[in-house]
View (tube, rainbow, N blue to C red):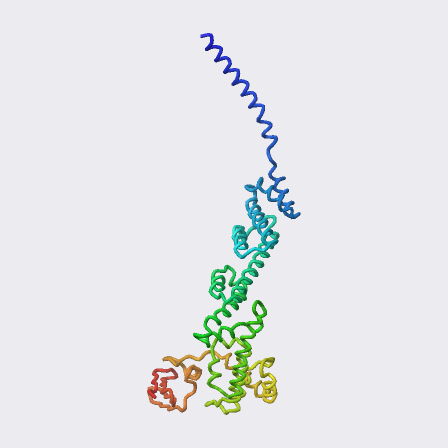
Length: 367
């Protein structure tokens, strides 16, 4: 019994000592609490001073404070990018940084938003250039399939026109034998002022097709020139000019005098055109300058007019004249005690009938 009482007393003494120690330790923990505001300001300062390693260590303390998590993502991506940019790395290494950057919101509004957003733009621009260089290298190796796969899977193919240029260039080579006309169109729809990757190679292909056009003009080969008449080629200033020049010299228009038809084609060629055969085109444009000016003014006037519509029941005479049928070849008018009726005769289209100034019937010709 005595031993039991002694054990109880010893236990109580120990608990009392532990309790006292615990009460004395509490104020120490409070006093050592980290001042997050100071630590956050420290991280911002280290980043602004470009002390990246120190900032990467310090940001761990504030990663759950304010925008600390985003600052940490930024620092992780930045350190990774520095290693890549200081050495030889393949495209896959860049992609990991791009993925890290994607975790930083585009609408980030923190203290370092300008610094971080500027850096993101820089990295993206460098990645795009690296990706385009890889595509160009694959093209030079004639690995068109792999090059096109990168373009198709790129996140930035809509942000740089070089992607579409290289895509057209690849497609031109892939279809060269099976569909030479389509292959040619792929080359000639590349902007004439393009001066980016593989521009020298593209220019050689473009010049080859231009020389074909010149040969067709010299040979007076209208059928071969017609092969260049596709909607996609209307954007190519050189092709358009050579096409119009050829038909200005050779065409016979059924609805115009030959000279008027020539003027119409010459008017389509820009006055500042200085490409192939411009030394032949400019003297003609100068010779017919007044006629060309009048032709362009007439085309502009017609283009400004409302698009005519088909005549319909209920139209007035004025509306019919502005329709696709225009003015009649002749009219027949009948007046009775019930009112006035009128027949408009169109040699090719048919007849339009009016009652009291409004269209009541339309008869189309079967010819």
